[in-house]
Each structure stands twice: as structure tokens, then as C-alpha cells.
Image (cartoon, rainbow, N blue to C red; front, side):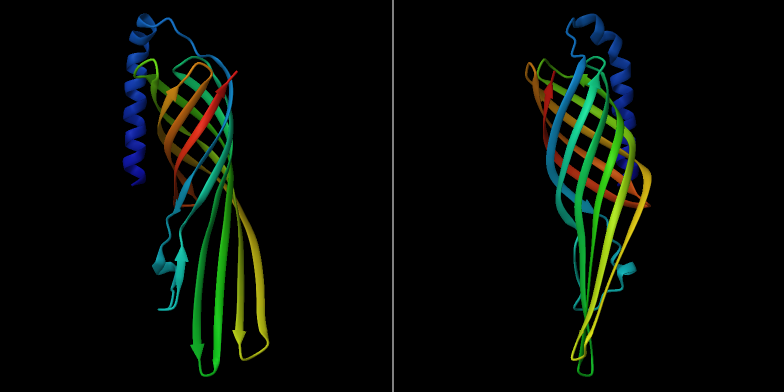
Length: 208
């Protein structure tokens, strides 16, 4: 899936680059300047259930609400630089093990956030619609908490750890443009230490 999206981004970017000269000659409009925005969507975490080694009582939730706050600068209607803060939400895993009269419950949650920087290449399909592709880096942080308890005996362990790193991400989107306001829908695919996180979102942009 990641390879398919990366290929789509490359093909879309190539199309945009090849048409910039023609579009510059046929359009006198410009949309340079700073902009800010926010988006709301759903994040999907790629969980390998075999690695979790869950029992028949185990369960996991690999989707959550995502929130993004962003700011950027458009050099023209074709190229922009953008930075953002993304709250991907969390993934949760629960499991129960029973042995004799003791029931052991295990719960894990991992909350993921990130700061991103990306290059966006856009191509106006009409005065209102613009298709775009993006690629960039994501400096992410994952806060993981694990709680283990046992009924029948006085036993409980709470552990937590924080992991971080920087990986790449790509995306494709479509925006509907007003004079100083636009609405965008996009899909982004993030590499988080070898695992995929996909985000499908809708956002609003204000252009200064």
C-alpha cells in the first residue's frame, strides 16, 4: 500500500511539473502568501496481530480521531512549504489470561504525535479545484503505557515509555478554493519506525 501511494505521489508530481509552464502562460492568477489551517480526520494504525500474540480474549482498536494544526507559505499556486502539528490519537490493546483462580488483565495504549515539514506541489484543475501531492518528514513521539493487574491476588504493575524518531510521509489531496478560504480533503501515509499510519482528513485553510 505504501509503495502504491508513493508511486501515485511521484506520478502526480510529474504531471504537475510538466504542466506548470503551460498553466503559467494560460493563467495570470497568483496565490502567494502565508496561510494557516486545521483538519480533522481518522487515523488507521497498521498493527501486526501476530506480533501482539493475543489470546482468544484479546482485542485491539487500531483507529482513532486525528487532529492537525498547520501553517504554510505558498510561493504561487503550484508550490508551497508547510509545517504542522499532528495528533494521531492512540492505539489500544487489551487481553486477559486465566490460570487456576487468577485472572491476569493486560492493557496497553500508545499515543502518537508529530511535527511535520513538507513540500506541496499543486495543479489547478479549474478556478475552484486544485489537486496536489506532498512529501516530507515527520518528527514523531509515541507515549506508551502498559498496565498489568491480577484478580485474586494483590498485584498491579504500571509501566510507561516514550519513543521518538523522524521518518518520511507522503500524501495526495484535493482542495476547493474560495477567495481567501479553501477546503481540502487528503490522504496521508506516515512511516512510523517501520509501521504505517494512514490519515484520511478534511480541513479548512485561511489565506492571508
